[in-house]
Amino acid sequence: MSLLPRQLAFLTLRAIHRDAFADVALDRVLNQNDLLPPDRRLLTELVYGSIRRQRTLDAMIDHLARKKAHQQPSDLRTILHLGLYQLCYLNHIPASAAVNTTVDLAKQNGLAGLAGFVNGVLRQFIRLVEQEKETGKSGSDEKLSSSPCLDPAGHVSNPRLSFLLSPSLSPIERLGILHSYPDWIVAVWLEQLGLQETEALCEWMNQPPHIDLRVNTLQATVESVEAAMQAANVVVGRVPYLPQALRLLEPAGAVQQLPGFHEGQWMVQDSSAQLVGYLVDPQPGEVVADACAAPGGKTMHLAELMQDKGTVWACDRTPSRLKKLQQNAERLGLHSIQTVAGDSRDMPQLREQCDRVLVDAPCSGLGTLHRHADARWRQTPESVQELATLQTQLLEQAATWVKPAGILVYATCTLHPAENETVIQTFLTHHPQWRIEPPTPGSPPAAFTTPAGWVKVWPHRHDMDGFFMTRLKKS
Image (cartoon, rainbow, N blue to C red; front, side, top):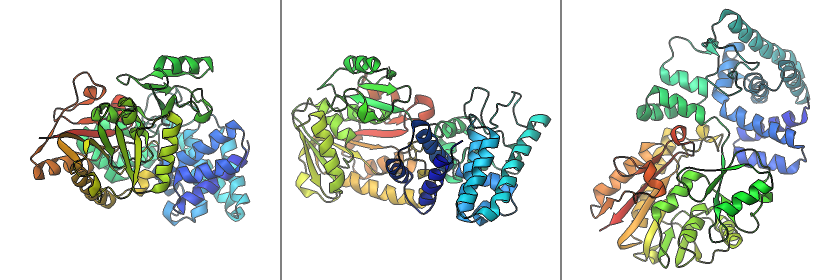
C-alpha cells in the first residue's frame, strides 16, 4: 500500500484545518503531483471523506483515547482521522494496511514518539468492532461486511458503531454523531421532514456527488451528445423531467476531455440547477438579468432558452469570476450575454429595464453539502441569519429592475426555511403588488411544485441537489 496518497491527504487536510477551502486545497495538491489514477481517487476519497465524517471520527477518538479529539495535537488528530476513516468506510483496504500506513504517517510527520499510540487506538477500534460482531450488538441482524461501517453490498449505511451511542443521546445528537453533521443542521431538517426522512437525507448528503451535463441545444442535441459519449465508452443516462440533462453514470475522468466539451455542446450543471432556467422561462428578444451570475451556469442556460436572441445581463461583484463566465459563453457560442461588474444591491441603471430577473442568491448551501465537504462545518446559525439579510436586500433591489407585469425568480441551493420560505413571505408582505406564480403546467419545475406554489427539490427524494425556487409576478 502506497504511503504517497495518504501523505498528500494529510498535507491537504492540514491546510483545510488551517482554513483553506477543501476543494481549493485538494485541487492544488492534485495539480502539483503527477499521480496514477488509483492514487488520485484514494487521495480525493481520504480528503473529502475525512472532512465529511469529521464528527463521527472525533467521536471515535473521544471513545478510544484518554484525551478527547479536540485536546489532541492537530496533526495527530488528522492522522487518526485518516486511519479510522480507512478502517470504517473503505472496505477495499485491508485493516492491517490501514493501520500500518497510518503508523508510518505518524513517523514521517514528526510524531514518531506517538506511533505506538496511533497503533493502539486503531487496533482498539478493530477489537471493538470484532466484539460487536461476536455479541450481535451492531444494531443489525445482517452479517457485517469487511468494513464495519458498510452494509454487505458495500454501501455506507448507518455506521454500526453502537459503542459511540449512549442511551441518553437525543435523536438530533444520534443522527449528528452517526452521520457527522452539526446538531443545528440536523434540527433544521428534522423540523421539516421528521426522523426517517432526515436520516435518509443525512445518508444521501454523504454520498459522492453526481456529475450532470446540460446539453447546449444551440450547438447539439441530447441524442447526438449521448451517442458521442457512448461511442467514447462514457456511460450516461437521461434525467427525469430535464430535457437537456445527461448524467455520467460512471467515473469518466477529466470532463474537459469528454466529447463535445471544446465544441461547446454542453456544460456541467446539476439537474436541479437546470430547473431554475425553466422557471424563469425567458423568451427570445427579451431583456433578462441574472443578479448573481458567476460562475454562469444559469446565465448560459437563460441565453440558450432565449435562442441567444435578446440580452442577458450577467451581474456579479467579482470581475475575475465574470471573466470565467465570458470564457464559458465563448466556448458555448453565446453572444447575447453582457457582463456587469458591481454589487447588485446598487445598480440603478437597471431600474425597470428587465422583462425577467433571476436572483440566484448566495446561501448556506445546505442543499449541496455532498459537493462541498467542509460547508457543514463552516456555516453556523449566525451565518445563516447574515445570509438571509443579504438575500432580502438582493431581492428588494432586483425587484426594482423588473418592468410592470414582469417576472422575478428567487432561487437558492439551501434547505433552510430562513433563507427560503421566510425570505419570500417577508418580501410579499412588504410588496403586495407581487404574487407567487407557480410553474407552467407540464414544464420541468412543475413536477417539484409545493402547494404554496414554490419549487423545492429534496435530494433524498429526487436524487439531485437540494434547491428552492419561486417565481414572482409583478402586477
